[in-house]
Picture 1 (cartoon, rainbow, N blue to C red):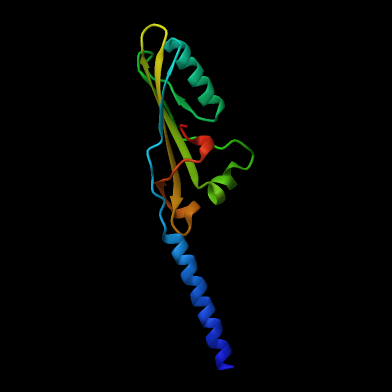
Picture 2: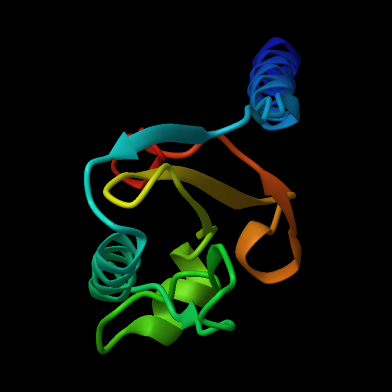
Length: 142
């Protein structure tokens, strides 16, 4: 009987150590940006980017028309169960900054930066703090 209790304790200890080891590894944030030159005037590029970001679920912050940057707030999930997603599963969020630089009258340099964050901590959705993560491919600047 003593041998069985000792074995059970060893298994519990081993499983606990494995769980703790898996939880202590922190992701290393990396810069996530993309730079491209588009053969279109800045006004058209700005309108297209605002439309794409809005359709993608981002709240685009309207700045001055001569401002070269387009900024977004954090993306909100769309659906009936947002409260459940945010409190139990909503451990990721992202925001975007786009900088537009005219390259003549018919070309525009576009620099897209995506910040992707996730919750850290044992009780991530409720008490964890936001830390930088590598963006998932569909949400990255690439």
